[in-house]
Amino acid sequence: MLAVTIAGGLILNIVLKWSFHRVRPDAFFNLATPMSYAFPSGHALLAFCFYWVMAWIWSDSQRNRERRWMVWVGAVCLIGLIGLSRIYLGVHYASDVLAGYAAAIVWISAVTMIVRRRKEL
Figure (cartoon, rainbow, N blue to C red):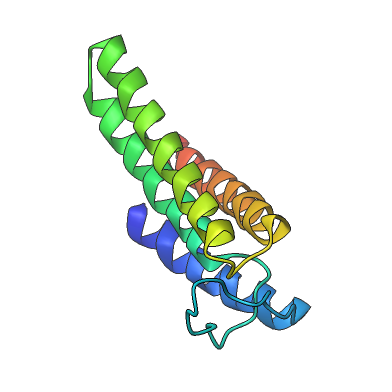
């Protein structure tokens, strides 16, 4: 499931970037501006996909409720910090990061529905 989620997230990111053609903001700290479009943030989208699915896999293997909670808190913190770092570095607007998160939620929801339906069969 992780590989499908990441591969699909990467494809979704490319399609969305080429659909919107949003130019990036001027980067801070004299960093080289990435050559791809800004909207949505690929780092935010793929970080959300990766850490969310990993938290789901790891939390399913934990019997202890406190450990499951810690896994989810850690995943959410990593996802949030990666998004904030993209804004802080000046390579994305906040809307780019939020759009990356939204796209990831839609994609993960679709993959989850497909996986659950396949288990029912």
